Amino acid sequence: MAGKLSAFFGAQDMTVGSPMSNIAKFSIPLLIGNVAQQLYSTVDSIVVGNYVGDGALAAIGASGPIINLLLVLFMGVSVGASIMASQFFGARDKDTLSQTVGTTITATFVTTAIVMILGPIITRPAMRLLGTPADIFEDTCAYMIILFVGMLGSAYYNIVSGVLRGLGDSVMPLVFLLVACGLNIVLDVLFVAVFHWGVPGVAYATVIAQWVSGTMCIWRLLHMKDVLEVTPRMLIPKKNLVMRLVTLGLPSGLTQAIFSFAMIIVQSLTNSYGTYVIAANTVVMRVDGFAMMPNFTFGTAMTTFAGQNIGAGRMDRVEKGTKSGMILGVGVSAILVSMILLFGRNLIYLFTETPEVIALGMRMLDILAVGYIAMSVTQVLSGVMRGAGDTMTPMWISIITTVVVRVPIAYIMEYFTRPAGGVMGSGTPDPLFISLLVSWIIGALLTAVFYIKGGWKKKVTLLGGQAALQHMDEE
Image 1 (cartoon, one colour):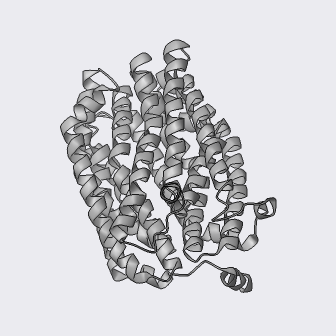
Image 2: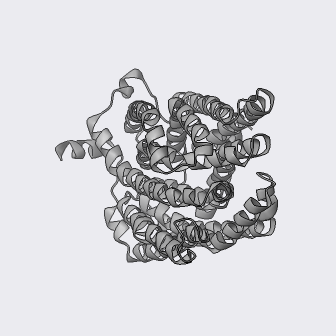
Image 3: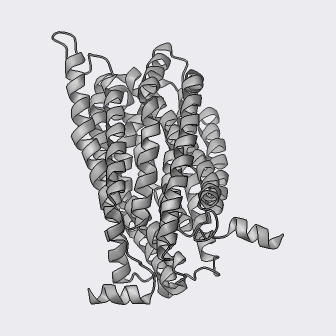
């Protein structure tokens, strides 16, 4: 019994056994965890939408692009650390794995400190630049500033849970997240419904819950002594490991930065339509978060699976695992999208009872539906490429689909839907989501082409071992 519990809660070796079974076992707790993490922002929106109003709901939604833009500083660290952890684990190199994790912990603190300082400084100028409506301006700024100041907990949860997943442990991050999510729900209701703190109340609840989850992840990592040992000496950053973290993580971080910047530009267009469209967009993005979960889940699973098997020199298993991941990803995504189309109106009703917002939200979900299937293809294949160490190809594809495709299409379509003599935002909001759908489909096609061409295989490098570190020293 003890052995079974240890296997369930410990690191998962994905270099042996059935690839389909490996990926499914790893993905189930990860998917549940993604659902729980999405509940952070979803519960915030439900509580303020019902207890405060559509204006407060719009205020939370308007803050999203700016927050995401600054989060990329440690999102890149997370991706690099996860790839390195999975490959070192697959290579059975405990010492180098421990050095990598120690370096990651220190790098997380430094990058997050930068965000905590810059965030509050840029909040008000950024919101003015985006043309945030006056009736939600103060609430939007208050929400953002509180999240920025308390961001260290979120940073450590996201990055350290990424390391744990790189080691094959997707269960304990789930347990910690469920605890924090439950706490967040209780505090949301307490601060908003009982104390009447409004939008700042949900921000305080989120920060407190994220600190709890981040602290528990650090505790878990420090107690995995059978896999790694993080001593004070390991916390001193090693130059070559930092450079490797940056090399692997920068493309993903840059991708997210460009994506967030594009979202800021689109948010400016969204704001021009007024509070109702902003509120509807906020609701749809919350539902969108759930629809995207299978995609991000299997993408992360494939990064870990590919990384561990490449570390063990098992490229044959990588190819088999890719087919299994594609079957799981597309299948689960199709089922979830069907449920959203059937029950979407009921989901939107959880956030607001305003008929205009409900109708707009359902229209947006109908437009996006097929795109979620396309994104499952993109995420699975990109996950394999990242696990092999090729983070550049997914970056370029994301830049093309976001900057070259989505933003221009959104603004061009908006222009042609205006009534005669109309100003920006006077036409239909459909371009906001048609442009997103087109970008997702093109992204899936490009990713499939580059995966089949196989250039990512040429970039496979075993990171593990002191020999690898020595080689990096020589470079």
